[in-house]
Length: 145
Image (cartoon, rainbow, N blue to C red; front, side, top):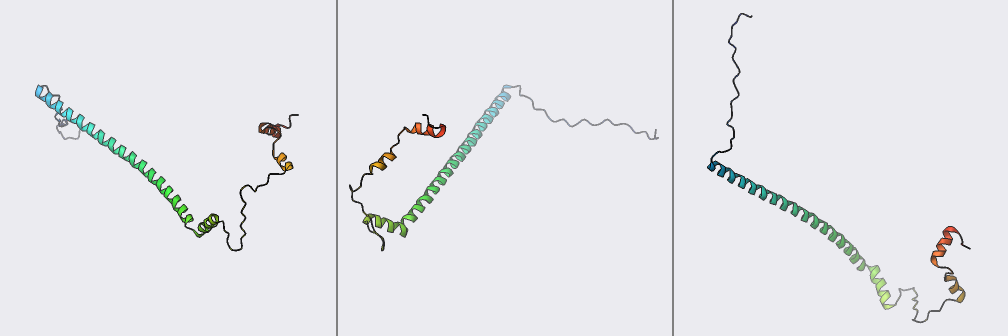
């Protein structure tokens, strides 16, 4: 049509790569079995390493939690120690142990057995006339006659 006669070349086939074929001989099967066993052993060893790393990570998380607990307990004990070393605690404890007061204070010491019983009119008011459950029912639902 255009006046040029060019031969039409067919496209070249793609270069073929050698295909992997299963070995047909016993020697080839033996080598394949050896490679398969080595692959399985490597996979098992890799799985063990992954599990060991995961287990170590879990232990590390648990130890970090324990460290946080110990740090919190240590801070609480440090606050208590600071209070026990303070002048306020030392003076209060000294006054308690020696039964003495600070200058200008009056110490009140009640000897054992010196307590007076309550008067009868106060003692009867403190004793409930009904059981506690009935008192609650009366409170919420009104007196039950």
